[in-house]
Length: 185
Image 1 (tube, rainbow, N blue to C red):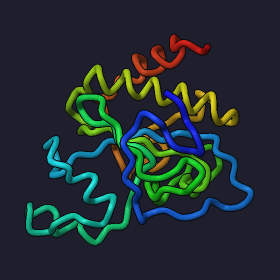
Image 2 (image 1 turned 60 degrees about the vertical axis):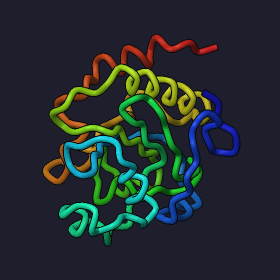
Image 3 (image 1 turned 30 degrees about the vertical axis):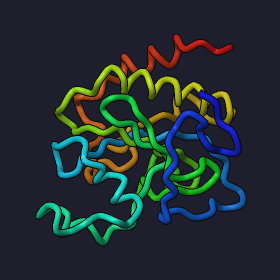
């Protein structure tokens, strides 16, 4: 995968209004892995994109009435089949981490890239998702030299007690092995 002007060339693009400038002194040095499904436990349907673009129809599902007012986004969503959509340029701040703390730092949106996997804490992720996540991670490690493997964390790590994603179903060992074995040429 290639990144040009902070956008993945191979991703669909759907610009979210839920973004803003990073602080002037922010250095992109972290990746936060999330999971999302809308409605919870259901995949497909395009509702995640609708949420990230403030177009979620609150009448489409009872759960949507609870969340349609939220203004959230991520940089990238990887669907079950490995298709990916980018909502926010990597140089901008996506609104994905919320209240967060890790290694003595807060406000992870300021310096991190948020990647959502279409999934749920207790549902195994698809091979296509791991493959695409490894490709994107490799591109990010190449483009943003301050990102280290040690600074790739789950939402649960930076928001313990508040968030549980990507959950027990996410195979960190598999993911880290795929990142380390990626072709670095």
